[in-house]
Image (cartoon, rainbow, N blue to C red; front, top):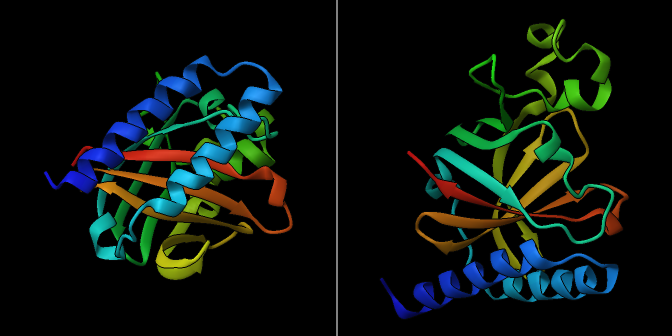
Length: 181
């Protein structure tokens, strides 16, 4: 493994550990600043490098989005092709891996009864190269939500993302994905 990728992975693992220990608002603000600094230092990733199944995790940085996906047992993302992405995939005890962010956000009282009807449209997306925070890299554009996830490469099997919601600059969601196949 190249030295720069090895160093990225070491910093990533330190940030994961720090994220698990972060409790108060001041610590979360410092972690958010460190995550931005780390993200900005990472190299770009091309859309075709993202194809496959990715398991996700996130950091809590003091925004209303903290823990939202984990409440729904977030699993990760599946990049089938550049134009066919299951943007938010959840794993439930009684279901296989399925995406249903739209249901979670808009129909929380119908998660179980209407899951098949509403599960996919809001969580479909595509990959595009977009300029964000000084670099042009892969970004995932949701078809039905005002959200773009911007990605950078930590190593060949690990990427970092920042979810950017239109009009919600204070709502950045920091996450990572690890390739599983």
